[in-house]
Amino acid sequence: MNDMKRTFFNRMLLTAVSLLAVACSGDDAGQASAQAVGNAGKTLVVYYSYTNNCRDIVTTLTGQIEADVLQIQPAEKGLRYEANGYALGTQLLNAIKANPDDADSYPAIDPVTTSLSDYANIIIVTPLWWSQMAAIMQTYLFHNGAQMAGKNVGLIVSSASSGISGVEADCHRLVPDGRYFSQSLWINNSNRNNRSTLIRNWLSAINYSTVTAIGLQPSAAKTATARLYGLDGRRVSTKSAVSGVRVSSGRKVLVR
Image (cartoon, rainbow, N blue to C red; front, side, top):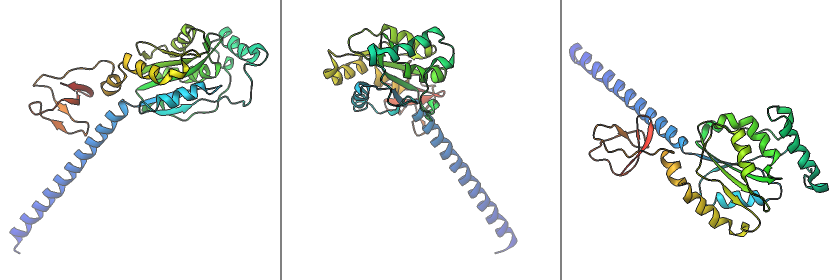
């Protein structure tokens, strides 16, 4: 091979290697974009259960939706909050009510390592104690409520018979900047055996599947000038795009 041919061959080889590197980098970026989009719709169910009623609710709920689950537990085990006319439970609630901004007012819980940044939707499942949110769950929200700012927040409350407005007020106090679903779900002793239907109807009422797919403010992308991308990070031609979830300007849109 003469010098001219050898030089030409080397240049072609370097060009091919460069193009391959760019292509691989583009694939990596597409995969990263797809992963970010996927994480944007993830749901976390956070619950505390003293009598196992909330545990049963979570089991039923996660049989109907795809979600990760985080159980909150008190640091001190074996306490009977209902004993002596609910004396201990009342004491814990009164301490919080007296100084709601003081961390020392809240009972200690086991450490949690779940990162809320991985989730767009948080569903809180909690018992009602004397018309208020259970003190154990209040502790978790006191320390983590700020991280729920801008996230879609749902509330499911288990009680014997009392209404849940006090628990809703506690939740809004502890998670003031959450984007709450249109309604909470109340499951009590009179309807507990029907919880599967109640949960299904609640998910339908709050448009849960739509929210988790494309956010609380879905947008129908119809303009021919919009740049659309599939969930794999690859651009989709607007002329040939089929209906479904797409990505445009960094957010999910629904193409109809």
